[in-house]
Image (cartoon, rainbow, N blue to C red):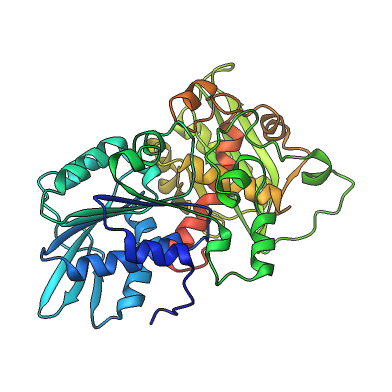
Length: 414
């Protein structure tokens, strides 16, 4: 069962006062907004005369991790059941008296995600991390709430201040009659002072402003401005030591550079030990087979074995993945969530859990060049400039993908 703790005043306001057509809880990470919204959502579903509802997240995996598993914990397995592979998509079933309420669970971040909810008629909508939803999904979901008493409940961390959720809904909440509460770390009464101290130490720059201070601010300048040569670069004279696990990660390009990185892993610490970098734009372009030959040599050079040390590859490189599988590589398709992956890499740098061997010269150069796109910021989007990013993309795959794959499979794959 869910472990109930003392609710803060702001959490109680969400539970008791969030009764508008749109109800928004936003602010710092771990500030208690999701727990309060979960409770409010349960009351809404149980009290509603309607039988069908929508729950959405960036993906169905993130929705389950952030919301569904805790809702099931609150209700107990006798009153709720999550069906991840139901006909018609994942569903959360909630027992209300003699009735069963159905919550359709959907991912929302892709341009065509809204197609999955066309035709629905729902009595309510829970959107986890609504700023990560595609705009067309938000518009479509709101249009599905045509039943009497239907309400939307949204949660999110702060994002770009020009984001449409901020400008069209949060900033106009009073004018349009929406419910809105801003949360900070003090609104979660269950956090210890040591946990808050460690959480604050994990972020810097724009991530600290958004996730810790709860500010809606623009990401500008260098993306990894916390990268420090004295802290993060390992020189030849420095002892490298041994590693518990290792993997190879690949950013594949045809006209663009192709990169292989070898990462050594000790618990939560990652070290980039070796790199392969070939620019197909400046040199003769290579075929999938030729790049696979180069990967063979990279494995041999570093005393790696295909069936033990996985290679993580951008999922868009379908032909190259097929070539590697035919050669008996253990291939893991990368999670290419750009902003979430950047945030994970930035956190590793901030907490001194990421190091780079000095021979990885291209990776080091990119740390000093990788920047936010200022034009995209004006449109409310966090996007990197698509330059000086090939080694950093490979690094992001190698750090973020094991984190995501291990969670979704409930195993320690690395």
